[in-house]
Image (cartoon, rainbow, N blue to C red; front, side):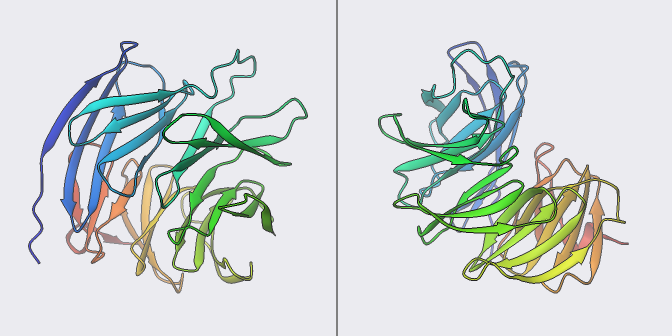
Length: 288
């Protein structure tokens, strides 16, 4: 299959004089790999998520403004200000996820209510209204993700919580020994990483740990980002990136990248967020 690499660079000038520089590196088979950096805002961009039609994306960062962009026309469509009350605790948004119908998105981070519980806010995409607020007796919420089948919203932090994506009732709490820094859903499983460097594969249906591997002795630090194409797993510890499979046995060092964004579907191309670079895994990896 021939993959056409599109080199599309655009700079978006925000209404409040913020600057976001982005580049779509590859667009093929409905996958978009994008590199993004914040150059003017002095506010770190924490996460970017594409809507399911792949033509729009949402950004959350340290200024707690949620921004919706049109990727095709390179314009800012809307700002969501659901977290703009006076902030005495420097609360920040870390994560965002869009449901499979593009009607709602969920956001969270180091955001707490008066009772000291972490909160997840569910926004309606069209109106920008907060339609639901979920409470978690937890530390910071590190990651949110709607499952592709539209059944669940999953949150991670001190524990992993599975919510019904329609009613937003709590279905299951998976208790973990350490803080979960990141996860990704792959079919009916979760691939998760904690702050001690452990990697887990967990069944969404049962909540049972299927596989665990201790990579804590490989570069000190938490597993901060995970990506998978269903065959390979790429994870980052600090700025060091590694490749493994679902047996969690063989580990391959890839390089000191600034965290991977995506793997191509065939698992042979790694896209990283340090500019317009992409790497052929078979050519660039170094055996650990």
